[in-house]
Image (tube, rainbow, N blue to C red; front, side, top):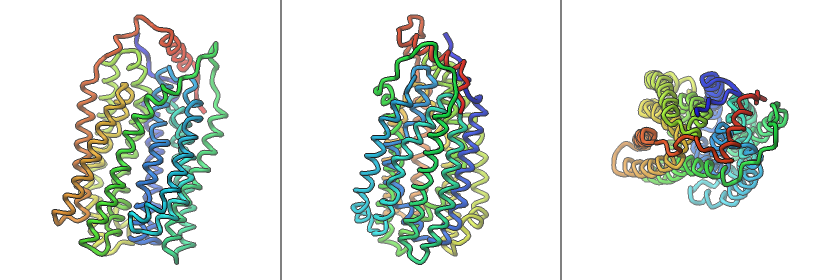
Length: 464
């Protein structure tokens, strides 16, 4: 029996458009934010700012990153009744632990990276780990119901608050670089607290038809079955970025006096611009899961894979022209967004954007293909991909900086290589996904409950 994709929210393209617009607006605001931030903090301040984020991203990944996709997959498959309630209990505890860990590690990280200002930055940023965990559960719930609006709205709200508070606070403390950088990270915490409050209110005001009889809540182990591999997948990137920041900056310090500034231009400026097309394509990744997972659960792998191929083709159609535009508009983007950079720093940023333009395509395809693998029931495959390429990226970065004259450009070429390998690995895994369910002719009690929940999803409006 074929199971139709979840129709409780928007259609695939409408949902993808909503979440893509939300992600794009969010990234545009983030890019615009870098204009006054770079003017106030300078290259060194931006370098400190970016050196804090890898640890934050690692803890955020453990406590939150697998949640939206995992919960979305469970709910859209029809077998995840009550998944978000279990996830609230589970990940509020995980998020609290993450906050404590970041606070404890703030001083050791500052010592390892040789930058005392990092300690205060970590302490002001660490509460946001807890709040993002809760926010991610709400996003996953609505994405599983096919409603992408709450995710898009909260992403934009986060950025608006962060920009407003970040610019105001950094300007107020502009005479003290350490306090100025730390205050911008305090603004991140404020934005997450407010966004989580709005999302929680949205969740508790949701309306929908109740099932005819009470269905058992999904066990915690079912949640972990998807969220743990997704967490392990997502954590690979920030781990590689943390190692990259340590390796690259230490190697560069043996060659140049402005090592922190060089890394800040690469990670804080070039990567910010390259991620704009990737953020647009995130909507395609998120919207793919409610379309593919019901088909995969029913055993119709052939149709599920067709949906996956369609998502990948649309991702390519969006990201490829964007990459071409990025390549040729690199000088203009640098002048508009990072006009405070001068001389060699400006030329370096233009060069890095041109080198990394291809990664806006490969990274977008990796993002969508990873979501497709999760929807097809193979989240572990994308975990293998990300860790393999994360190790590859750090190794190539170290080799190119240490043994060539590329300097920080070596990190850009390493990112290109890693993203290309990741894309090819995910494509290979998707092609090789086979039907292991054999249809659902002999339904178990769990399957019948799942089909009941799917019918409930199809009848409910499930919106906010």
